[in-house]
Length: 345
Image (cartoon, rainbow, N blue to C red):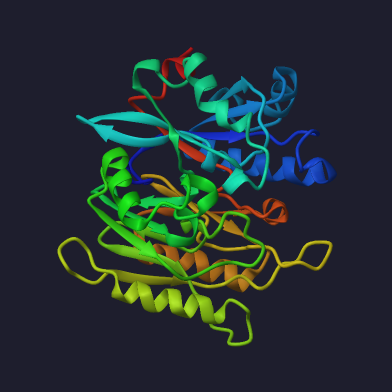
């Protein structure tokens, strides 16, 4: 499985529309999507934008600063979290492949019949080159549930991957074999602790801890002993100190701050986290939450692990209202299976 920072050339997103859960806050979420897309395209990335209708997509894209870098694809989808139903990239014989895993709405919590067909739709539209597409739909796997260092190490969470509502509650040993066969994982790090209030994903790894170059793990910390996350994240940190590289070395640990609590209209806490960033070969797109001190510290902390990268903050207060953030709303596409001739034309 490719590392996220290995030169993606496009980002897959799905534009919120009135038939989605975003209907009640459409101006706010559309503004957030415009900001994300502007950040991506200004840093040389194309965006493949799924839209419920071409006209709606064209009207939205016309207002963006780099409209020619946005590819509109008319498609039906249940939800906008492309991280979890978009293609997962692996490299076979130095050529990337787009793997299409099954998606069942985070363990049968939400409808996913349309989301589960998106990769086939992208293949049929030649956005994904048909010869590089691989059908892996007999196994349920969400992109936000696995992290890769691009060298054969995969990090995931026990709570998510062993969920009985995904693949029948397979054991870690069984899953290790599947991850080895399909993602080339020869070293799997199983995180047993850590969860965020308001999270619908059963502790996706991209809300808690992320792999980075040079045997580094970036993780969500909590220093407030009165916060409900303090104890589970302390246990998570303790387990991270025990993780070892394939060579037997400890990982370098970099702690991100915990955002101040954010609540929805009913007073329920939302799963805000700075770990839900998107990283490319030259830039990190960081979710920020209108908390100047925490936002600044999170962005500065990222430079420890990625000293050569530009860190770009994107206000994700609208995104978090539907229990996701920047990484959840995006999926990187790579040269080798992404049909860049479409962009050139």
